Amino acid sequence: MNRTSSRWPLAAGESLRWEGRPAPRCYVFRHWLQALIGLVLFLACSFWLMVGVQLVGGKGYSPWLLLVPILLVVVAFLIGPGQLLLSRWRWEKIFYGLTEDRLLVQSGFFRVRTTAYPLTELKGYQQKTYGKKQVSFRLSFHGRRPVVLECLEHADLLRDLLPDGCGRDGS
Image (cartoon, rainbow, N blue to C red; front, side):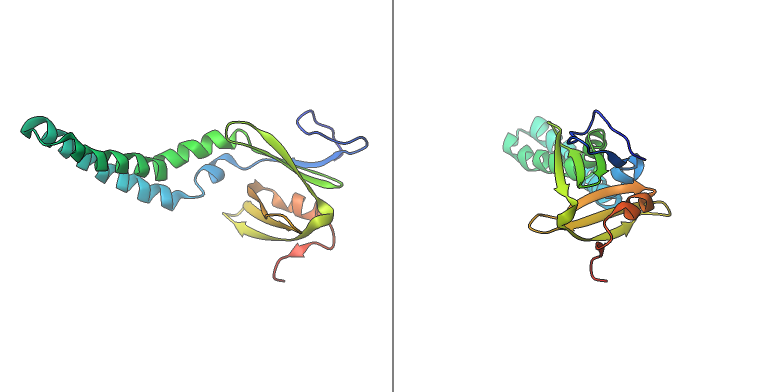
């Protein structure tokens, strides 16, 4: 499966052996419990804000009474429904690639950048299963922070291409 791609900054003679990206639904809803709790808090804080607006408008209470519910509504939105929207927006910018020598990760929130990780520095990996077909890999490198490849489908293709000395962490 040797290919070249305009997406990746490949060195001379280097070819792409594997290319992937997160499964969209798995990636967006991987923190579904946090989103559900945030949604419940968002609805409760919105009700509190609505009551506060009626109190301030009708009875002449200080507008400062609205500051706490407004802040809580914003924070609860970011924890709940907002994190789903941000994950979906971020998903469009995430790509993974593997060459003979490097793991390439393309991601970013506002500006997309490509980071290369030499496979010679790969110590091992851990995996987390999200269902029958989706798996996330946490790859550990010497002298670097671990890299997480989220929600991959057909992860066995990538696992088979990892270097032979690389095994599961802790096994």
